[in-house]
Length: 395
Ligand SMILES: Cc1cc2nc3c(=O)[nH]c(=O)nc-3n(C[C@H](O)[C@H](O)[C@H](O)COP(=O)(O)OP(=O)(O)OC[C@H]3O[C@@H](n4cnc5c(N)ncnc54)[C@H](O)[C@@H]3O)c2cc1C
Image (cartoon, rainbow, N blue to C red):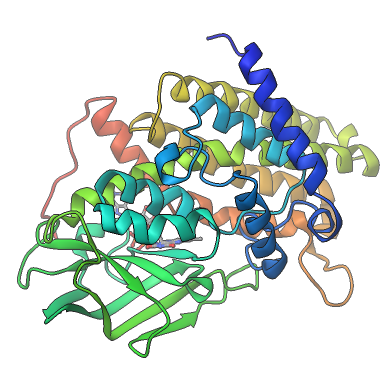
């Protein structure tokens, strides 16, 4: 694979750079690129405004087909956009779940009416979405979903509990996996519903995280309602749609994280040079190793994306998720070791976590969400190595 930009890519890169240089200014530049994973509450209102700036200039939903308001951008163009975006320290994106997960799902499975209703506000950054999959007894084992939806006249009535719902408190809508076929088991009888969040039957309770912020929530549906037409795919066949959304999740993640990791490692190396810790031979070794592994990650990502113009399918997606989640967790530990004893100290009022501390704490979750390390290993074991499948139905 030739990793150099072709002439068309160079022109595209220049166009992206021009836009970012002319717009990442003032209050947007002041955010310093913050607002990413583990930092989602930072500068939220400003980032929402930024979303509109991006949308007005046609820089949201790049990968969507032009007929739905996207640019029909190739994977290469999306990689270039992400690289330049990260390099410019533009604000952390707000509408990730709508743009990256629900949008592509609707484009593949939605009715024309659903596309017309829901895609434009995602593209314009005026409606935000959250993902209602996990429940207290349905995380890795998603097919165990118990939340129900029952048809009453023109509406679905939803009852049950979701958990770990990222950004629910900032979202207008939720895509919810629920059981519409009473008495059905496992992946049969599930449907994929679009549910408005601002209604009496929805209660959102924030969960305090290690980072002392609350990006995710418990969401209680107690007779919540949505219109009968708000089912994506066939009623009772939501498992297929839910899995498709997960494959988009893994593809998008692959693209998004790479350059922020490069920036983070650069900062850690700079601190190690400043405080003299880079003279420690063991730390030097770990820094070099982190650099080498990050380079391997980049080439692997490019390899798995080459020739792909859609979601990155397992097993490549599982290998990448296992690799970057584990790598980033180790990097968080390395960052604190570079700080030494100061790693345990909060600077001054208002005693916010430093970037290194936040990254160390939040990266613990990265080997859990989007499929835990153990689940990724199971997928790799079964689908790549051909090992016997894990026993099913064992209590
Ligand atoms: C930061 C964060 C954000 C999240 N955001 C969302 C969101 O927006 N929407 C949403 O729906 N969910 C979200 N989640 C939930 C996430 O998808 C689940 O946490 C994840 O699927 C794991 O499920 P669980 O927490 O129920 O753990 P469990 O499934 O109970 O797993 C517990 C442990 O057992 C292991 N395990 C489970 N099954 C197996 C097996 N078959 N073989 C080997 N080991 C196994 C797991 O790897 C894990 O170590 C988020 C989670 C986090 C941490």
